[in-house]
Length: 238
Image: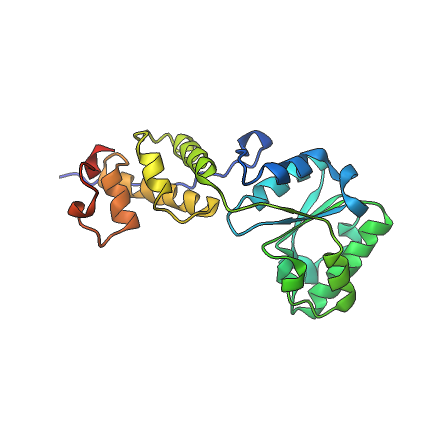
């Protein structure tokens, strides 16, 4: 008896502009980013969206086009602010500075130096600045005065397109009917889509079989029995 070895190699996420799927959930934010910082009030923009809505992808699209550096807000407390303020900048997950006096002060000075040098700043966050809990009043006023564009949670069309792309990236052939079946049952985020496809890939490799609806059912609803499927819905058929 032979044992199949399964190698769960991570599939790198592609953050290119051509891999950003457009839907009503993100079209307006994409237009703002594609338009460039010249159209942003005071040369800065706050990109808001829930976790897994595509903020990082869109931030990388702008950074590549603008020649910008990308900096995590969590690293601000240890960053050389003057060095970071010498070119266009993306600051990711800015709400993470709240409650850290050193990080808040660093963001305040970084914001001011970029403004003085007329360098664009793209900020990403999951919530508006009024909800961050900032302790530094001057920073709060500057963040609240930043123009905002939003990413809504992904709709069915976007989730479907992302799932198809993720399966294709891993060279996994699935029945077309599996995609809407997954969309109706998965957590509604792009991060959840990536995790689900990775889990299905690993499970199919471990069992030495294809990705089917039965396999997806075991992952998404492990306590469900095959008989729980709707009438006429054969779990192994997709």
